[in-house]
Structures are given as structure tokens and as C-alpha cells.
Amino acid sequence: MNNITIKIGSALFFLFVALAACNETPEKPNKETPPPKLTLTANGFAPVPMPATLSTGEPFPTDSTTVNGWVLKSEVDGNNLETNESIIQHGWGLWQALTEITSEMHDNQPLRRFETWYTPEDIINAYNLKNKNSDAQLIHVKRNRGKLTHFNQFTHGSNKMDPSDASVLGFVKYDPAAAEHLYEKKLFYKSVLESYKKEGELAAIPEFPLGGIALKPVFSTLDTINPATGNYVLQVWPGEGGNNERSWGPSDWGNTVEVTIDGQTDVANRIYSINDFIHFRIDSTQAAEIKNNPQLPGENPQKGNYAILVGMHVTSKENVRWTWQTFWWSENADQPQTPSSPLIAGLRTNAGLDAAANHYAMAVAYNMVQKAQPDTGGSNQDVTSVYAYNPYLEAGFSSSQFTHGNQVISDTYGPDYAKIQGNLNNWGMQTNCMSCHIQATVQGGAGYVADQYVDMQAPYFKSTVTLDFAWSIEGNMIDDQGNPIQ
Image (cartoon, rainbow, N blue to C red; front, side):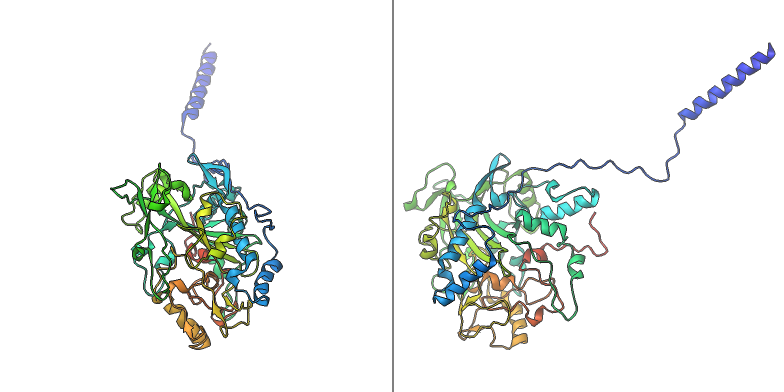
């Protein structure tokens, strides 16, 4: 009997110990359990690629032999590059494709093709997402139209621009192919860019893919109202007035039109419907980003305010030095001011533009000077200037913006090298897209220059890395050395 009691007691004791062990807090494992993998889905709207054929009937991308042939033909025929019909029509075909309304939506608003594309911030956010989840791809990054801010060019140069002349906001956009190139090659990382450097030699990043496109859309937010009419007031380009040797930014123009949100266009009184402009309504994220940006003092748009597209740089990788065209809103799109022309305007009729896109003027720059010069081995002797600038981006530049670049070129080639017909182009209205963007390097080169021929193998490109004409890479470079992105 006692033996039974002892056995039962022992059993109860071991049961108690076992139960107590179950209630103890388990030891923390030496290695933490990894967090669950992120769920990856495509966020927001899809990027819409360029069509295979432009509205003008040309294939996209157009073969480089064809594009270069247009430039050559303009020389053989004795025509100026700015009047070559094939070049002009190609520019309008690109514009139609970029501005075509797609089925994609954001904030209950339809998106034009260029609005669906990627910004540098999108690509950098995709880097961050990839660091957290190796399965992440560019398509998985959450996007909106883009973060509206000032452009780097407004703060470059020996004498920075008056903020009132840098009143436009915008962002850079890349088509899906160009964006994927920047993402896969990690070309915003400073360490990656500098890995291409060869001391004392020419070096470059991997070229963008054929058909890649980079854009710089420029917007004005509607925030000034004429109390007499209740309409918004917008500064518009009045032309250079026959004098391009001056700084001529929006604060000096003194030329406005009125924009009505719910009324009709009244050309006689210079009142235009909002539908005469490519535009969108600012979402809550964009409004907060602008309000909290210390570089934008006094800017305080609200959700739902209108942003009007006043201009856009457009460049397409269809040849080694890209194609270059720039657009801006014109009050009289049939008779636009310099640097466009009635001839350029007249060739847009077959492009199939919608009413808003049809209200923009264009300038083209498929070479730096006339006679057209080759990629390497050309000169500034016996040539004339090809001016192609955007009034909202370059017209406000003073000669001080080009001091450094002029000095570098003078030190390299001599003081008279860049003088065209005896004169040095030295103002914002004397610029050329290609002359400027060929200078894009990783913290080196000449920086900004006005219109002139620039050799792709200029000696001052040695010991740096050229960026395939993309200033936007230098402007968004991430200093990740010793400070990896989290």
C-alpha cells in the first residue's frame, strides 16, 4: 500500500515539473528569425512604353543611319538644320507619342504616356526595395506622377539664378527601357559610377539602350489670381525681343495670360481654358513634398491645385549623340516666338496632336552648329550657331553661368576656339541642348557651356566618367561609399 502511494506521488511530482517547464519562457535563439518576405505587387499605374511606329509614320526608334542622314542631307541641300523637315516632323512625332492619353489612371485622373514613366526617385526607391527583398523589381516600386521641385541647373554656375527666375517646378522622367538600364546597372550609385574611371584616360558609363528616352517636364502651379476676373495669371514666353545677349528670366518677361478653370477661351482678351494646357491636379503627397521642401520657400500648393506644363526637354537615344527637341506652351502656336519658327509650327499638322498638345512650340538641335560637325574631330571654324533652348529653363542664365565652362575650354584649346564668327556665345538664349548635355560627367569636365562644337573625346573628359549626355545621373547621384542605403 505504501509502495503504491510513493509511486503515485512520484508520478504527480514529475507531471508538475513537466507542466512547469511548459510554462517557462523559452530561451531566445542565438539567431533571430528573419522577417517575413515582403509581398511584391506592381504598385499604382503601369509604365506605358513608346509605340513601335510614330504618328508621322516613322518607326521608333528610328535607325541611327536615317537620323544621321537627315543631318547630312541638310548640309548637301544647303538647308539649315532648324529647317530640315524630316528632323522637325520626327520631333513632332515624339511629342505626340509622349503626350498621348493612356488608359492608366492616378488620383482619378487619366495619365499621358510620359506621366506613366519613372523618375530618378522611383529608381532610387527601387534600389532600397531591392536591398530589403532580393526578389523586388523596378515594377514593384510605389509611384505617383513625380516629386515637384527645382532643377539642379538653377543652382549651378558662378552666379546662381535669382529664385524668382527659377519659379518653375518639375522632375526628370525616363521611359521604361532607360529606367531599367539605370536600375540594372545601378547608375545612380557614386561607387558604381567611379568604378568606370580610368586615371588619365577617357571613360564612360554603359550607353543607354537604343530607343531610351529622358525627359525634363517643367510646370507652373496656378496660385496667382486676378481679383478683377477671378482667373489665374500665368507668365508666358514673350520671345527674346531681338536681343539674346542678356539674362531674360520669367521675372523680367512682364507677359501674362489668364487661365480659366471653368470658362471658355477668349483669345481677344488673352484668356485661355485650362484645357488649352497639358495639366494635372496636385495630389496630397506632392502638396506635402513641396510644402516641406526647404528649397521651395513660400511654395504652398494644396491638394487639387492645378500644375500646368509650360515646357519639356525631350531627348531620345536613336543615335550616339541622341536627338534633341524642346517644347514650351505658346499663346500663338501657329506663329511661335524664337527659338521656334512658323516653319516648325506648320509641320505639326500631321502629327495627330490633341488640342492641348497642339498649343506648344518646339525647337530642335540635332547638331551643335551649322555646318554639322562629326562626333570627334570637328571644329568651330566657319560655322554658325544653332540655338535650341527652353525659355523656362535657360533664358534666365547670365554669362556667369558659363564662366567655368568657358575657362576649361579656353585652357584646353585656346581663347578663340569657341568663338563662332568671332563671338563667344555666353548667355542662356545662346545655348544648345547638345552642347550642354555632352558635358555631363561625374564631378568633372567643363560643366555648363553655351552653343559651340564639343568633341566627344575632348581632353578635359580624361580622368572622369562621361554620363552619356545625362546630367540627371550626376544630379541624382547617391554617395554610398561607406554609407550604404538602408
